[in-house]
Length: 126
Image 1 (cartoon, rainbow, N blue to C red):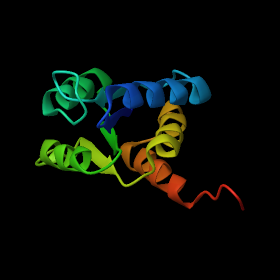
Image 2 (image 1 turned 90 degrees about the vertical axis):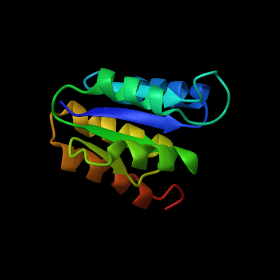
Image 3 (image 1 turned 60 degrees about the horizontal axis):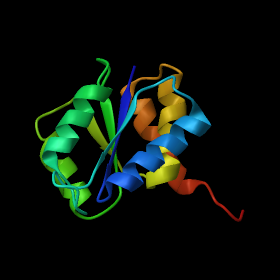
Image 4 (image 1 turned 30 degrees about the vertical axis):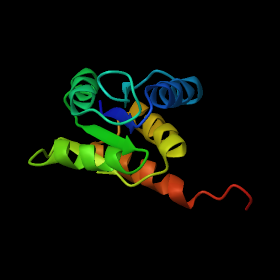
């Protein structure tokens, strides 16, 4: 099963977005937060990202969904030379939910990334 990691500048934001996704999509696939710095401040941490990926990895790959700025840079550093962990260019919350629903069906890595990225096209006001 494909895992999902939410990379954010805020530990609280990453944790709550993961909890919201589980509340809506269910616990059929692993999703883990990777937010904040190692000392609990705002920022990103390669160590936290590595730990979250290790927890989420079930053998079928891991999708990273980032909030902005240095979260993207940290994710880029992590995915270098790794085919099993990919970044999705997706909205943070909606992408997480779409990815989790799709991963829960047993879909492959490319389909989970596509589902996360598809969230960009879903209008809120029609």
